[in-house]
Length: 363
Image 1 (cartoon, helix red, strand yellow):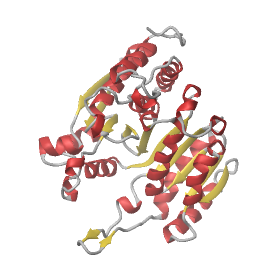
Image 2: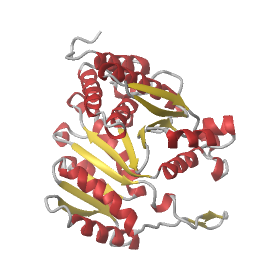
Image 3: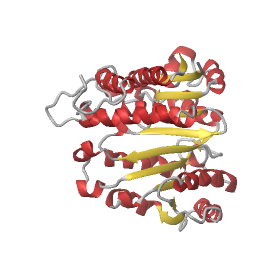
């Protein structure tokens, strides 16, 4: 039996709660499809600062580069907002991405029919919404130098090379070739030189994909189009900060940040995490939505381990659980209690274990 090494980084806030449910589902998939997973936990973020004095300690660094894939919960702690940059939980996340070289962040957004009424958008605008955001992850303002803040003037540097743009653009075009064949490239080329280089490079890459339709759009209009005509978007590719903002905006389409997964891919082990934050205000209450983490585990199976059939089964189980009414508090109507984090995780795990189970038969 094949054994895969998975580094689990629960992180902060609700991270440990949702990651625990994703791990249970991963084990169920292994039992169902005949592979074994060696899951080991390591600290990151505020939890790592408290236990090891830094947000990405050496034992975590060594573990993630040796793993077959990495599953992350969330990082962030408001009590550390005033900490030096080197000790901020988010610094550990940026260091992790750079360490793994994961330059392409994939964020799928599809509206489940049972949740169409959970979005503030009219249901007719959600028909056919199935898009993929491809965000460049290791460049731009988050990593550019110089950067400084002397209390009077602050500086951040937005920098991109043609090579950085080309490699993430190819990920987007390859994805579109297996989907509906459309790439929407988002930039601000009317203002920013980096966006001008972005557009020039994407146009050059597009020549290698004649069957894929390319459209360019400014980021401000992209934000409007995501809510006015989301079904028209197939694959959206953009730079780091724009992608961060637009992918969170896209969460409004599905009804909750807690539903959306992500996969960050590069040359080495992939990094898989829900797009939500650490949500400290609800940590420890058992009400966090684990579906984003579980769907991230499905992406880990598909993109990290090459186990597409197992990934399909996890995603099918999520869809069936939602169709049968499995809801945490974020998806409930006012006054409804909803299920706990563990109860939703247990339902999905049970469906992964049982082939052919259909809505209405979940205990």
